[in-house]
Length: 135
Image 1 (cartoon, rainbow, N blue to C red):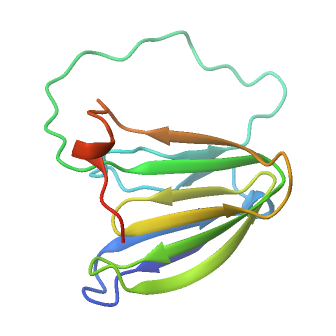
Image 2: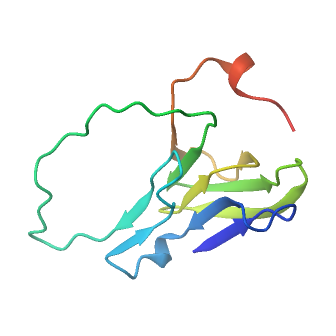
């Protein structure tokens, strides 16, 4: 797993890249409990049971959008940026890879035709004009 920290403030975790090949532990936390996006990687063996449940409604104050990208098929070039919009690194994401952005910026470019991915963000989403700014 690759954890990318800010060069401006090295205590701030900006991005996490978890490769399909990183699955070695039964449970691996990709985010700390104080992040808006809670991401885990889990390995379930046959017969593993998660009891039926639902999550309670709570009042959460969310002032930042965080994002998860999971590659299903193909390849994606991911460019990651720091808090001041300066470029940090380029990563090639492949099938089964998961990338989480907590802070900082990112940009993506498909490297193969028909690249399939899931993009997951915390909401609500108020539209491009209120939620995004170019770098």
